[in-house]
Image 1 (cartoon, rainbow, N blue to C red):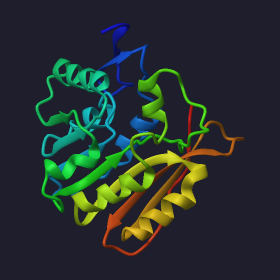
Image 2 (image 1 turned 90 degrees about the vertical axis):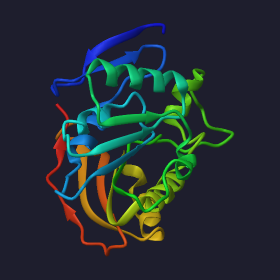
Image 3 (image 1 turned 30 degrees about the vertical axis):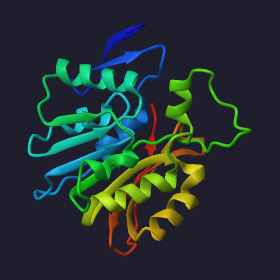
Length: 224
């Protein structure tokens, strides 16, 4: 694989394979993984749009859970598999398929937690996208939309299962509307800022299936 390199996954103690030809994992994935809270009854986690698997790798530190990730693009899937092997992780499995086919693998209403760091940008025929197809699919809603992701999450989660997503702050109202549409109650919000003087760029959200909204806004994260 061209330009494939093995890097530290921040300060987690894990390593991760990346390629300069595609894209690199972002701080957003690290923040998302650290935003997840486990209950003692949690056993199964599903990571959508898993990329080269930073979220499953970080979550794998909890040996009581089994994590499945879906990555559509074969080139990125192969990086994820290499990373899992080099870290000798045995509680993560990555599936090379469209997450919209997840019900072909799992019966639904099965997972305790669903996580997702999705493509952030809407896509239309007039969208300006990267000439690199792999990068453009990772960044734009070409193969999957925000609504698709939330619909899949509600199908795969158990009642009162938790959905964690990181996304752009400027799409927060849209996210809330879809969460309400698919019967999620929002439980936690945490805004991310590039500096103390900047507007929020990202937001972390925890929502529960078949629950009412009961929102806690946590202290902001200031990227350093």
